[in-house]
Image 1 (cartoon, helix red, strand yellow):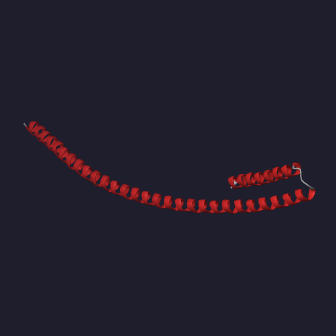
Image 2 (cartoon, one colour; image 1 turned 45 degrees about the horizontal axis):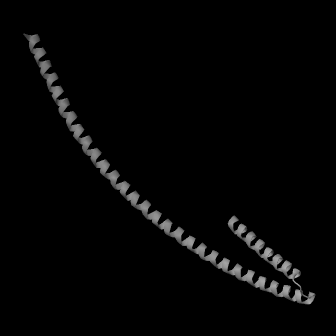
Image 3 (cartoon, one colour; image 1 turned 180 degrees about the vertical axis):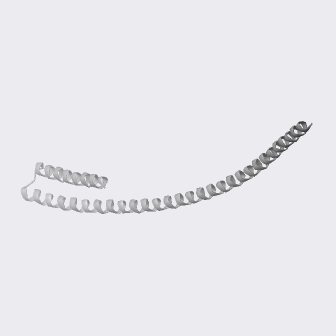
Length: 137
């Protein structure tokens, strides 16, 4: 919004400066008062028309730029949504894979632990039997 204000201020300053310069040059010219007034009137009309024309051109360019910016923002939003959706799917897939591997590893660790525990129980049972046998002898 401040860019619009700055541009408007620039345009107004440019127009006023051009008008002041034109008036000053006309007043310094060696002409009669009537001729000078007529030239000032023509120049003022010409500057007014040129200012209105410049304003319309600038307004049209601003509208085109605004519409382009909206279209680009919409495209960017669409691409961003697609990327987020793809990332979410990939993340869910990786999470599923990780859960599967974790379950397999936990099952494998559980089996391995059970085998070790069974072996320890067997050894303790054997040792207890040996101790009981030795105590009976």
